[in-house]
Every structure is written in C-alpha cells, then in structure tokens.
Amino acid sequence: MCGRFSLTASPKELADIFGLMETEDFPARFNIAPTQPIIIVMSGERQRPGSNLPDRRALLVRWGLTPSWVKDPRDFPLLINARAETAAEKASFKAAMRHRRVLIPASGFYEWHRPSKESGEASQAYWIKPRAGGIVAFAGLVETWSSADGSEVDTAAIMTTHANVRVGDVHDRMPVVIKPEDFARWLDCRTQEPRDVSDLLTPVDDDYFDVIAVSDKVNKVANTGADLQTPVHVSAKPASKPPASKPKDPPANPQLSLF
Image 1 (tube, rainbow, N blue to C red):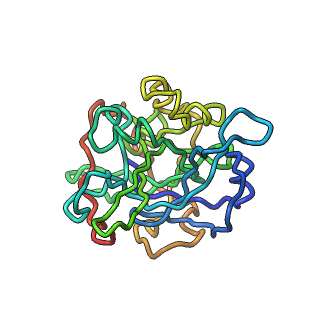
Image 2 (cartoon, rainbow, N blue to C red):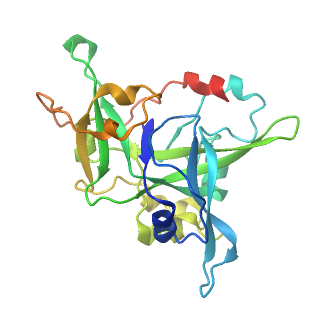
C-alpha cells in the first residue's frame, strides 16, 4: 500500500511535466498523509492550443476516496489505495476507473518494513524516490461525494500493484507509476476503457526507485520537515523476498473521523 508520500516540486516544474495550462502556488510537502489535500492532474474539457489533445488541469482533492453512493462516510472505510488487479470490478472503484482516472504527482513515497512479531525487531521506515530524481506520477482515481445538504467533496485514491524486486525488499505493494509517454492514454476516459489501459497497471522497472532508510520521524503526521528524508544507517537491509500474490487489504484508516 501507499500511506505517505511527498511532493516538493515547484508549480512550474509541475506545469512543465504534466502540460498544465496554469497552476497555483503551493508549498513543498514532505509528509503527506491520508485525509489531507493532495494535488491531482486530470483531463480538461477544452483542447490544448495547437493540439488535438484535451488540456490538463490540477485540482486539490482529499486523499481518501469516498464513492458517490455512500450515504455516511463515517460508516465507510477510508480508501486511500485501490488495487490495480481488481479496481475495474470493485463497486467502490469501477465508476472512477471508467470515467475519472487521474495522475497524482509525487517526489516519492514512504514505506515501512515490518518484521514478524516473533523476530522482536522494530519496523524500519524507507524513503522511496525515483533514482533519476524529479517527479513521479502515480495512477489515481477520483470520486465526488455529495452530502444530503448538497455540499460536495472531491476525493481520491492511489492505485497500487504488487511490488517490483527492489521495493519488494521492504513491502509487497507499491504505487502504480504512469510514465510521461503514457499520460495521455491513462487520462483519456473517453476513448480508452479500463481494459485498454490495463497494461499500464504493472510494477515499474526494478531499477526505477532508490530505497533509502530514514528515521521514524515520518511516523508522526506532525513532522513535516525535509529532515524526514535524511538517510540513516541500518545494520542490515531486509532480505529480498518475492512479492505476495494475494496480500490482504489494508485495515480501515481511523483518520476517517477527520472527514
């Protein structure tokens, strides 16, 4: 799963990479957590000047998808991730998978290696970022939830797949990465059905990410400084293991109370 990530790029960098017509200023964020606002990139309604492709726009949404048919979000689990293997069939995600696919910009994400209880070892946090630097685009889904009084909340989930070999040293799941050459196809919900983009929902190349041990400061949402990504020494790296074929779904996030 992906439960924390970072975005420290400038608005101009975002505009250049994603072909955005305009962007607003936003601060660098080193510890983005569920229920917080995140930036998503979606297809617009107009065509880009000099192109037959639609324009793209950035939007702030709440991280934690709530399907439109939910009556009371307090009685529904917080869906921060959507499994790529089942999203097209799951009631919570299938409408968004067909009509509302988006890109979620990030500088990288955090994951925890959690040894078995029997080992007596403490969990270890890792900062996982593109080896070449820059911004990575996660596959995302967006839904707008409407309350009885007519107010609306835009909500999103990050899609995940089984981990590649490198990330699999730490965890058995990882975000789906959409490469720049596939942005247009992923965002095109008019002509590209879920089956047409299923080939994009696979683990990124094994050498795409660097996996860096960091301190447990990232465990606390209140910690938001750049020092969260400072490398730390660990006595031994987790042993490589093949990714689990059918890992269990993550438990409901208690931060749903912040809705």
